[in-house]
Length: 437
Ligand SMILES: Nc1ncnc2c1ncn2[C@@H]1O[C@H](COP(=O)(O)OP(=O)(O)OP(=O)(O)O)[C@@H](O)[C@H]1O
Ligand SMILES: [Mg+2]
Image (cartoon, rainbow, N blue to C red; front, side, top):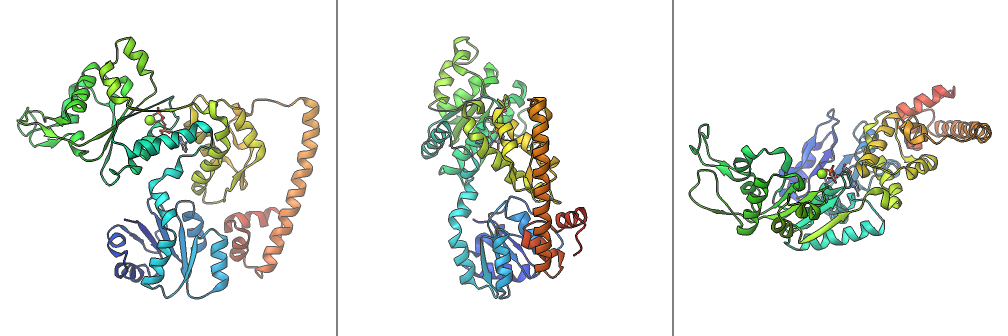
């Protein structure tokens, strides 16, 4: 069930081809066709087929390649094929597309498509602690046991819960997130179990509760450590009996559910203090996955920072941000992240909106992070070095741009493609360096 995006002036005809290929039913039902002039590219697709005979294909490619594999195609044109692959296309096909060539390309990239779909590779971490977590996710996905995910706020508990569901045999059924603290006791039963028509004033129709809606799938109780005693009792009963009863209902309804819960509280202590039921705790905590705070796995920071640059860079339409400078990274490695991965992601997202070059620099980071000031002497010396470095970079940039313009015969769009940057970015540079095209 791949969700394919087709970007082409001839999208409708091409979609017909997908229909008549072996992949047709999936593509036909779920594929979205974007007509030219509608530039929206979301991360909801598994792959894109991009027509290089369509105007503005470079921009589309730069946008889409972050989110999914892009398979480029065009009338036979070697130059264009090379250009597209350089800009990040995963593959290239010649027109006319055939059912075979499409099937073959999809088959070839299926592994990558599926890993995108299952999102496992979106959980970043090469620390020993995270490698252990990956192992536990796989074990938890293969089993039906309940899982309790613990860890400070922002460590990725929800991300892990979703990954377990996606990797489990229940992945075609729903993943129901229930934010426990958002449901007051007065609405608890009607929300979780639903009600029958006429069971109370205002019940003008029969409504299934969240648990019944999730039948066959996974229920994720988030912030389970903050729930009321009533909530605990009701949930325990469902866990024990595997049944629910709608308000005003006459019969028990069997539900087939797998429970994943998460909390940033220490439930064991809560049990000792008699604020959390011990019997419920043991039922929930069959498999425990603990996410250590980011400050205890600082070796993940560089990888995460790069991942978030990739994730948020497409938000800048005027400039193509590719990486993070060594200096900026050193600053990030010094921080201790009370808000964990979420805090790091926010820092990078902010930096992306502040950046003026293709690299995230220290000046793009929040001032509080840059607080450690060098001494005056080293400052003077480093300012002189920094200036020399700046001059050298400007010189190289000017030379490279002039060479690209010569190669493209003065065509700015083509020069931008050669350089792998956006046209607007190149125009700004040309102005800045007073280059005559
Ligand atoms: N290992 C990781 N790799 C990539 N992104 C991550 C990772 N861990 C967390 N994130 C990202 O950090 C943000 C916070 O993660 P998440 O919402 O899962 O945290 P949480 O533990 O549920 O926090 P809270 O307790 O506050 O609800 C999300 O945007 C998530 O995608
Ligand atoms: Mg959460």
